[in-house]
Length: 314
Image (tube, rainbow, N blue to C red; front, side, top):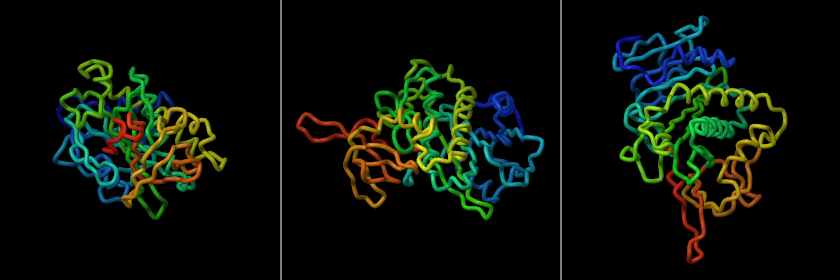
């Protein structure tokens, strides 16, 4: 499964060692030079439609595994699948997303929510907080936008997150995918309302270490996810992690327009998150799905959207 190739953005063996040093057990790490979608590829493994024993002929792949891993089995919780180039990624509400090769950190991870499945709406939120914290370590101030985006302080998109549920006889699995704009330059951006770590730090991107960024994300995400699974209180927003999410979420306290999946719009002030991670509007209505547009007063007194209105694209 290994062949001659220019250095991957992430060295799978090095990542496993760094994870182990932080008491994180990553049973399987898979890294391809190119793939269509890390969520699609990992979901195929979770459903048993493909196995780690399959040797793809259309790409170069590297795998690091624990000694107990059976290549014929469905990947265990915290299996990570990443790529140097995702060329047919998915966004929210059926959107597509692509960026130039080797200029983003794109990966997915398997989670087994078990009894916490009713609160799975918190999963992309805690993932966003993990990404936000890692980006801050890289020198870029960032904020969260409900439900699945990480933005610069001035509202430009740095990361999108997409979670999909895979029902299995043994219980649901969540395939959680993230795409972070790391080395993109201005000419690479899909829209003016996006940015990258390289642009925000005014570098050519070569200084953005994908492996370090990934281990930083996992070091925050996995303990936060464990806190969610083990949390006994009915309202996770009152937990330590829940408080961090709320504190860094620019959506809260903002006038918003929520574009619902049925095409209707809801206007109001985002006032909090409920026990399931849904957005609360005007202390009254909980929204579980939809595109949120942050609004601001215009000179004529009407409301206009901000630069953060581009929607999900991971």
